[in-house]
Length: 326
Image 1 (cartoon, helix red, strand yellow):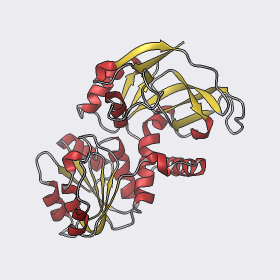
Image 2 (cartoon, rainbow, N blue to C red):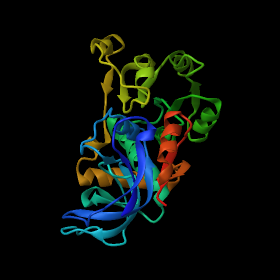
Image 3 (cartoon, rainbow, N blue to C red):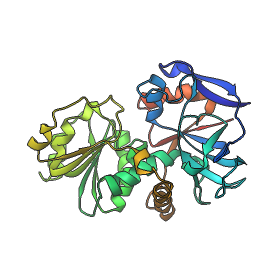
Image 4 (cartoon, rainbow, N blue to C red):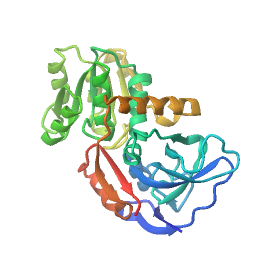
């Protein structure tokens, strides 16, 4: 039996229950991982609330990102062995001291990446990798707007976009978060609660507007984000921390400058093992080079997952947050 956080009914943070569960021996193509750190992501709240229904029914163990050591290997697994350090983003089941992971989704962890770094960056860091390199290729001199610039994805995205030579503009909710975003590569910050971010973007760019907007906020920043884009610009919506973007008339994209809009997800960009390893290794390379650091700014014991969710939803966290099994 191992400790885990399970959800028996959809709801607020109070539905996260700390209990003991059985973990089976790994089956064909699986490994059993003793977790050193579990990543906390906003998507975890969507599953907890039922915004994203659990694909495995009730009850389920929350979370889908973690890092640890392999303590058992199932039949047919050849490229991962006992004792290997691995990290992953996969299906539900992460908030636990040990779990089974499909070997194909486990990524070998380089020596220079700690377990807590890995758990704090696999989902967020690989999201940044595909957003800035594949969804829209950021290049030197481009104007880039990153919403929630002091959040988990935001701080990594600011650093990475800066490293690519972009002019990085970030929206934040407070002066403290503005300072944090600037320390992590943002050239300009906008206090979205106090300022009209569209007007500020026009001012900062001298009317040129942005080549791309990366938006993990959703409802509160749409459709105003479209007004921050130059003609033929890209609106990349990758999250909805304030609620989902409602259905809209696609003709709005024409009238605002023949804009492009997309709602990408990591699963599609890492669907094959080759794409997964390419994405992860590019991330590891950026971290290894020092161009991107992974700020794990909050650490909670696994048993305190309820409080971690309250702080995340209350916008009290910055950067990455991890849960550590006892």
